[in-house]
Amino acid sequence: MSLRKPGDGGGGGSARRAGSPEEARELPECAPGGRLMPLLPWDRFSAWLHCVCVVGFDLELGQAVEVIHPQHAKLTDKEKTNICYLSFPDSNSGCLGDTQFCFRFRQSSSRKLSWHCLLDQFDRDLPIYLKKDPAYYYGYVYFRQVQDKTLKRGYFQKSLVLISKLPYSHIFHTVLGKIAPEYFEKNEPFLEAACSDIDRWPPPVPGKTLHLPIMGIVMKVRIPTCHDNPGTTQVLQSTQQTDTQVSIALPTVHEVDLFRCFLPVFFHIQMLWELVLLGEPLVVMAPSPSESSETVLALVSCISPLKYYSDFRPYFTIHDSEFKEYTTRTQTPPSVILGVTNPFFAKTLQHWPHIIRIGDIKLSGEVPKQVKVKKLKNLKTLDSKPGVYTSYKSYLNRDEEIIKQLQKGVQQKRPGEAQSIILRRYFLELTQSFIIPLERYVASLMPLQKSISPWKSPPQLKPFNQEEFMKTLEKAGPQLTSRLKGDWIGLYRHFLKSYNFDGWFRTRRKEMTQKLEALHLEALCNEDLLFWSQKHTEVETVDLVLKLKDKVADGENLPVKPGTVEKLQMHIDSIILALPEDLQGILIKTGST
Image (cartoon, rainbow, N blue to C red):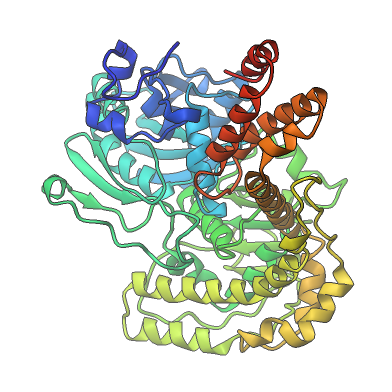
């Protein structure tokens, strides 16, 4: 199928399905040469959501998926079972009225969207901690339980669930807050109309101000990019024409109320930061799924801008397909953070080394009383007092300054948003103080640019040497940027054995290898390749052309200077034109799409 740029004339119905010509022009390019992806029905919807499910309660079957929209969305039986059980609070939670929470579950089979390469491009521009994980889905839930005497069970129980690859909890909970209450009153036609609205949304491009219409209102959002300064919130750009329609401007797409989540374990925030950084097994025992899911998301975000590379489950039940895997006593607990509400877990997970028990999350005017870390043997049931149950001893001395600052805020009735900003900045500075020495050392593993020759393979990175890194900490360690004292060396040694270090270093090594390949490509572009080919045999020239074509294909995904790939293509074209006609025809066809 030939693709046309907007304005070239023609175009099938599926291309028009996306919306106006203006909207089509805004879509990023996905193919070499500036060709646009053809948009199929539900492509825009699929950029944001995999599907919308309605989960109800059947007296004979229990929880059951009643509706999947759009109807062609595929879910395996295992995925449906997970969605069914994770979409309802445990019976002990006693969630009367409306409850919102989220969960995360493994994808059973791989699927590619019709414009997956376009979405991969968006993913490249995201901060590392917002990149989608191909192995997992998120489920965003709006659950309603109200008395209804007309039903046999005496209660109306139903959940509206958004299934997505994107970790944009604030966007999706806002959407659910707008559509779920009306859906429970108006049923299917309303849900179809809401999904049609989402299918008119622009793609989730990082860094752009997006206007997202949903059932009569417009949400204005901006997805962060990897180029934003960590810890800063970009001001949403104003556009006079559209701002008259904006009903809600969302300050964040993914952040939770950090201070409210950490308030029950206020005095242990620094220890919890260490446990998350080190990828230690953690259980959050909470009275409801909304509190468990928010607390788990808060924990994962506290080491930002580092990504948490281990598994985490904001809400986990005994019916989860990984229940046996995560609760077996025959092996050491895995590196995972679980959010649970069922009292059964207090017994099942007694062998886990770190357990956080939280009560009802609320922002009172009282300053939390100092609570000591409790011993694990004291945790018998879910009715145990709130606190942190662990035998872990922190590597770093406690920072009394942040405790005093936040306590003062509670006493002065400082808004929760302001408290969260202070806490988020504290975690950010702590993480940056920890990671900067590692970044500095890893940068030194990069070969010098002068060692890159266009006629040799790109040089290799030097290997990471733990002892060599440790020696750098004496003069260029975290003490340069952090006032905290303690066993920083011990913390680094523990971190270097963790999944978080492994994931971070693999990502950095890949980025640096790509940078070397990009510099090699740029070095090739600066050579007179036509002159080289005239001094060598036809066989050697053909070999060069084939290698250069591979370089052009790879260059699409490398951080090269603008125009580099095009310049290399011009080199290839000029070399081919200088060859005999029979070879020209073969080489033009080879590798062309």
